[in-house]
Length: 292
Image 1 (cartoon, one colour):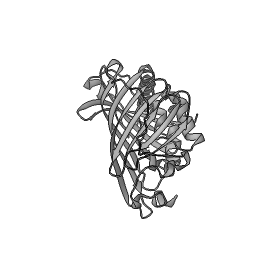
Image 2 (image 1 turned 90 degrees about the vertical axis):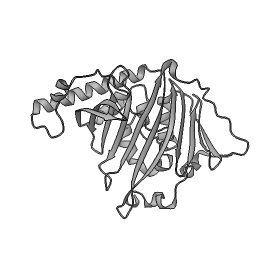
Image 3 (image 1 turned 180 degrees about the horizontal axis):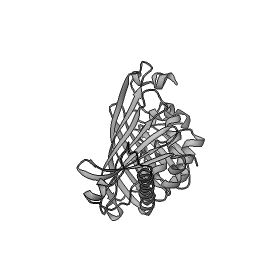
Image 4 (image 1 turned 120 degrees about the vertical axis):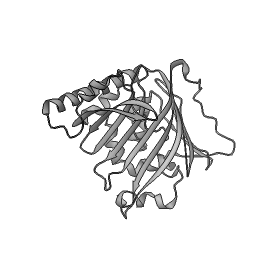
């Protein structure tokens, strides 16, 4: 399976209209609270001691591996999120699209996600057999057959329908094996605070993409922020997701993960997904990323 990090930015032209339908889910990190003295000993960006740098890289990978293991153990989880997608026009002006939504996951094969922004109000449902995308404003929906697990759904949407969901590998059962093979540089950057929550801040670099994740410290190590930066696109645009109100296990509200189409909704074909989301003309794909 191909890494999300490379695919996300390579396929930006495709997924801009689908931004965050099942929005990027940051991997949950298993970490322990470390005191100020331990934090002070960490190597941050710009460090010159090779041994310290190597230790920081190893620790970042260790923390992320624990993250992957912890996330895989969560059979049910939900959260609210705010996302921000930067777009660079052919005039080299950087602008952004902001939206908010919710996500509920029940492993191995159930997802319900929503996103509401300035130009669209959309919902995504996967019941283990069918994936449905519903545009509430436009009153249209599209469905694709995708029997199997969440892991298999990501592959089907990406390879068969060419509709990659940004960061979708982070929903998978083994996040570490999906993302680490292409990582060329890793850093443990110490502590950061997101929404009042103290987090472990990790940064990773691949040939085409830089990405960062902030993971809550303590007994509930959930992701607080996840950022992808395209270093190969003019202006280095970013995709940022802030995650909050995390719930796991019995805390997660029950959901049948079924879609009942409204009587006045019109069904589209999977081929129509490229025009599914609503964007203003200024954000049209032909004006995005230098006309690529």
